[in-house]
Image 1 (tube, helix red, strand yellow):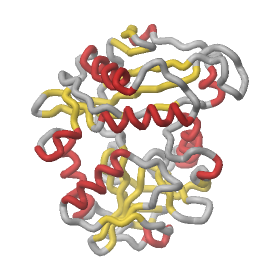
Image 2: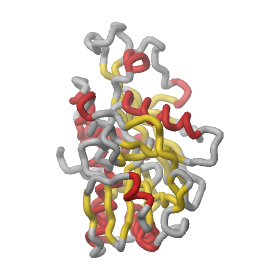
Image 3: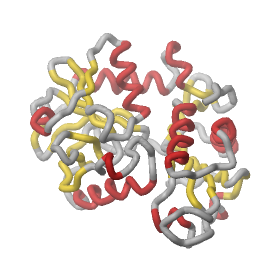
Image 4: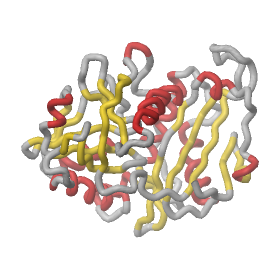
Length: 307
């Protein structure tokens, strides 16, 4: 991670090394925080943040799920993110806002712990340094939606992903894939999942997965290109019989999958539909497609539609 100069913390810019939190902060112990991963890209208009409004809306929603009453509204968070990127003179990279319960009382209930908000950003290129990746189905299952609020982006949910990542450490696999408790494909450790079969794009339905912002973008872009996109329960057999497969997410963008459990998907190379969606996505996030310009917030533009 390449440090930048400033982290926005609780309303003011703080030098990177001084942005500290007490070891007894509640969220550190119990996982009751919410965060977002956001990308800023170089565009013809200069640095531009991709789908910032949607990310802010989801962060606010996730905080509400936790009963966290932030002293900053959506507009203030939006502006703070733009300000942080601008102050760090970041041309491209990753933005991490995180809301958490701070130091106060230690117990499972978050009552008595002040809500805090921090925003960091840094240069970041590709998440996977591979043209396509090899995936292993995890022995762990995706968190049951009856045990949590599955569509909130809550810090504690990612322990599930940490465990699956430990499984593939020191192996040739690059990422894990979760199944649901009823043996349907859910998502990766931090990504949404798609397959392509006979020119049709399929992705698991909402209910067991995080409703990814990149996922929604790819579905819209594909349909706008005249491609058929269906949300459908998928089995591992469906995936292994697919012509193509790929992950989507803010960090991974559009990442082709070469194999699952050592079974090659299609011919094991990047398929034509995946390659097409990967290129279209890059064109959109870099501001090369005018009809999707509204997805981008130029860092010098604080225009915002109210949540």
